[in-house]
Every structure is written in C-alpha cells, then in structure tokens.
Length: 68
Image 1 (tube, rainbow, N blue to C red):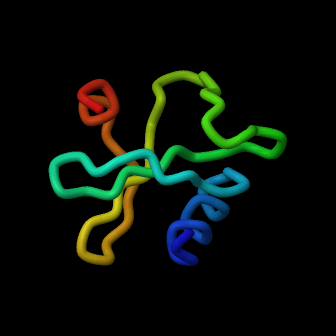
Image 2 (spheres, one colour):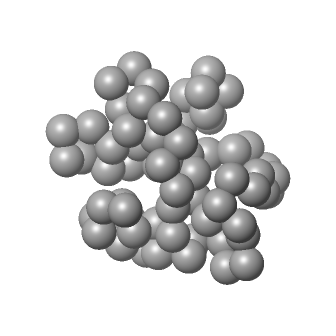
C-alpha cells in the first residue's frame, strides 16, 4: 500500500487502509481498524472511505460515500 495512504489513515484514527477500487478517477481505500481482516466490512456510522487522486488524499464526503 502507498505509504502516504497508510500515514493518512493512521493520522485519522485507523490502523491502515485497503484498496477497494477506482471511482470517478479516485483510488478508493477502505479504512481499517486493528483486528479488521482484509475484505471485512466494519460499520461505524457512514462508511467514509479515503480518496486519492493525483497525489492528493482526503476523506470522502457523506454524499460520495453513498455513491461509492
């Protein structure tokens, strides 16, 4: 995984992130918690994901997460 994505995930309270897919030109990553297995879905409110495009990394908006 991209070191910048891992660092962003950790800085936002997650243990890491797993690549999910490409959506609207963004690389989409599922944030992971300690003990979460790859491919396992963890529901804690809206399922926000990490978006990366052209080296810029951010959390999705609630509207984006519903579309994804």
